[in-house]
Image 1 (cartoon, rainbow over the protein chains, first blue to last red):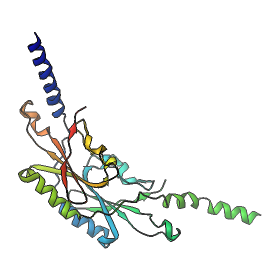
Image 2: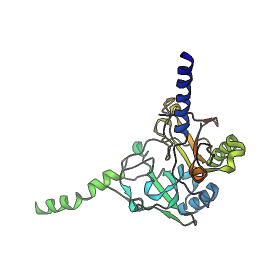
Image 3: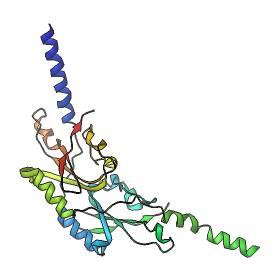
Image 4: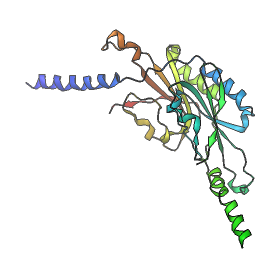
Length: 130
Length: 131
């Protein structure tokens, strides 16, 4: 009796793992652009010396679902469109100085977010302060 | 007095904007690795699989704050180790076939792989705990 019980417990545990492993992800379409192409397009659109910025993210996801990992408050109105279109999002932090702040508070950084569509169209997303 | 009130009314709308503008971001340290180096390390770790996956994310952030944008359920337990350390997180989706599913569902089956790449170039595949 002990042996079938033990087998049942083992099988149930394995089944649990198997079921979890088959949880479906959304049917993510493969991007037409490689990440290297995306980076080249983003840097061209940014038009800045790469040493003045910190690249912190490259993400391929639906426009409606993208949220930047860093925030200075406010929102990107182009992300509110609920578009299901998959795009690349390239996020940079910028060490741009703020003349209204004293020298010891110049850690302020600005976020620049670039959306790159599958056809290579790039756009810096306009930011709206709350 | 009127002039003073007018001045205050004119200035006030700009004050919240000014404050919002100066809301600081965390002091994110620059990575010692370039993005090209990070991608090379990730491809090397993936080996032959590199061409069979879809890269969906490369992120530089604090370990405790990393959350993959996609999920198959479960959580990555290593994210509790050295939570304040900034690392690169490279996320891939994989079209691995699942023999338990019928053929018409095979294209939807994807496995997710997250690589954590430390500032010294150490690459580690994150282990997932199913919940």
